[in-house]
Amino acid sequence: MADVVDPEKHTLSRRQLLRWGIAGVAVVAVAGASGIELVSHGVLPGKQTLDGLDGSCSVGSSPLIFSPPGPSTSGSFYSKARNRQVGYYIGFPPGYRSGDPLPLIVMLHGFGESHTTALAGMTPAQAVALHVDGHPLPPMAMVTVDGGGGYWNPHPGDDPMAMVVDELIPLCQDLGVGRAPQKIGTMGISMGGYGAILLAERYPGMVSAVAAISPAIWTTYDQASKANAGAFASQQAFAANDVITHIGELAGRPVRIASGSDDPFHPGVVALAGVAPASTTVAISPGCHTSPFFVSQEPPSLAFLGRNLV
Image (tube, rainbow, N blue to C red; front, side):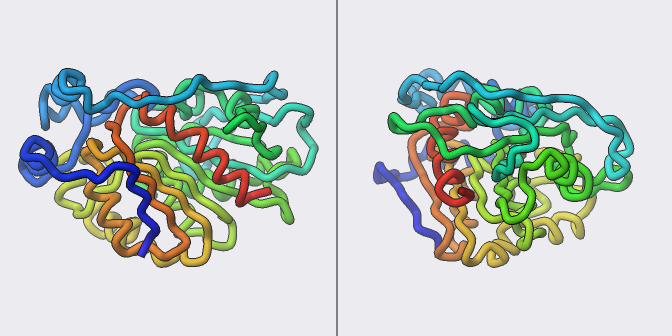
């Protein structure tokens, strides 16, 4: 079972049970960096207003401090796996440049987002120039890419996971980052947090460490299909890409998962924590599925990857 870090003893209120239990669907209106996710489905209307009124989404965090960012490169390529053009962005740490050997963080974006908005409140170049607890991160590069809205799992005619593994990562390795013996880690927010876990489960020989922030995890296909019909192509696809069922594949690898206690995806994180291997740390703290929580969890997530990739 995972190591669950809960800085506040949290008791489920009647209000939370209503929030999590209506129609048996855990869904959320996502603000800020991950776009407006699932609100158009009309489930749990007014959640953001309700949370704002009672302060559930208030998250305290220190100002972000960066070194002068290192260089970056961006562009696009035609993805055979996705059957379309996709954009990407690579940020290098201060003092480094393309061609220098570096560990690589593959940062996966949330629903409705793209390679330009994968992070909350910063660019990839800023992310790897971040100071955490007064110290700069170890030198790492970060890449973002357009993965569409299909939850980073294969769909007919669109396989974002194959794009990452067979096209994006080799592109990065040609630039010197993520090339053995340098390590590769995955990171993501919301849909991207789910994708970061899934990618590590499916490619254990490639991914050395994972940091997922507010991962969008459903416990059943019925929940997923009612909330977002495009998340999985079928019941069989859900079973094949269910990160809870396959979490044992991460045994022995360092994994950090952060979840806000008022995040409607939180029940899925709790279910995952109950079966996760001991190498998984689940950090539970007050917060919602909103930008303030995402921003507050980016520094510890990046520091975690720095400790385990460098």
